[in-house]
Length: 120
Image (cartoon, rainbow, N blue to C red):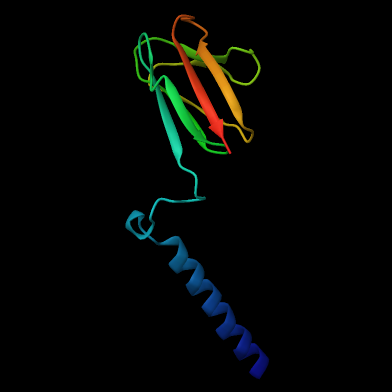
């Protein structure tokens, strides 16, 4: 009987903690997440903004098509980034865990170019 009561109290505590942790609002978080922020690059009609980005290795980048035309992100080596078609007002997520320089362009508009510097 005592074990049943003890288990009941323990289970109630676990459930209460789970409910509390799932009911936090956005104001309860400081936005640091895993420590590295997401960077955004906007694909406009004829440019990337910013066109040059320097960040820490492991940071994430979201390419956002901020235009009314299709874009695609292709690294100049044709293998590091291959987004496929990004429809207007859609996005593509990218993350790289090594250092180096990634030069890229729009696959649909090759004169639209950018560069990402990944530092340790």
